[in-house]
Length: 89
Image (cartoon, rainbow, N blue to C red; front, side, top):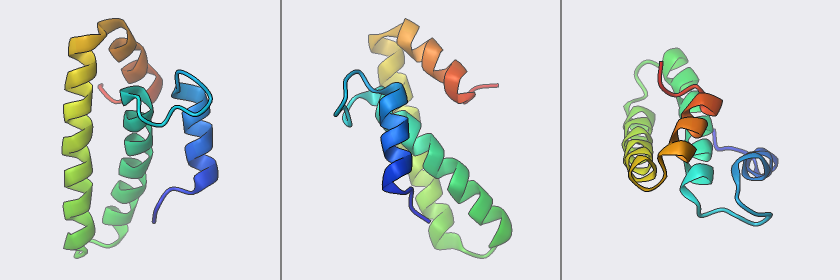
């Protein structure tokens, strides 16, 4: 269910500002997006798993707040990130 360490490393290398960057909003949003896609697939299969659904909704809310912060601080990086992750339609 959780994202593997290797997947996090690939995401961090792609979206991070430097080699060991784990705290920047870009990396956090990218990791959350990967978790959201996994949990969405899980929710489609297990329709009555309300605990995982609640966790999914919490992650979506947290990602939304981070995106709002990034949009306020750096609009160019925000636009680049949503294009790369295909978050907004």
